[in-house]
Length: 205
Image (cartoon, rainbow, N blue to C red; front, side, top):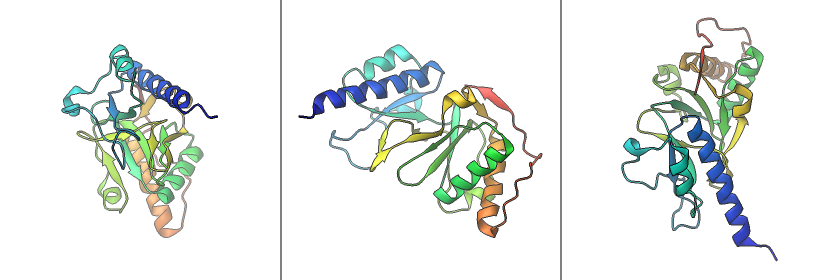
């Protein structure tokens, strides 16, 4: 017989380990709602005033996940920002990043959305913002991170933190790649040549 309680406890520990790992890097971790807690839909922060009270201290975070399998959310706008894009644009941008040999943290969600993470502080260009399905997560927003359950699956890394050594790319570098990807999916023409107008600077998170 499947030990459901044991499985849930093991998953809670996995979520806690992920939250502690992010917090140890200075990322602003926020506990989110989870399945089985009388909530439906996408996870949202469980704490009032989470924008001002997000927590980077691993010890306190370990206490939050001691008894509840909270979703793991990261508040954007201070350390990290995220650009949420549709599946078509996400796949094309990943292809361009590989061709350019650029490091960039990428997550994907079961609903087909991709999340490209960058340093905080710069909105996406208008050309990106005008595309349906593109959303910039900056100050006052948040994103779910692996292994948070989301709809009919879990959030997972397309490019894991170990690969890019926790270095967040400059927003202009990723935004430039996303603009090129957008033009490629719009025109059907893929330009793999390097775009030197967007530097590849990174910073350690």
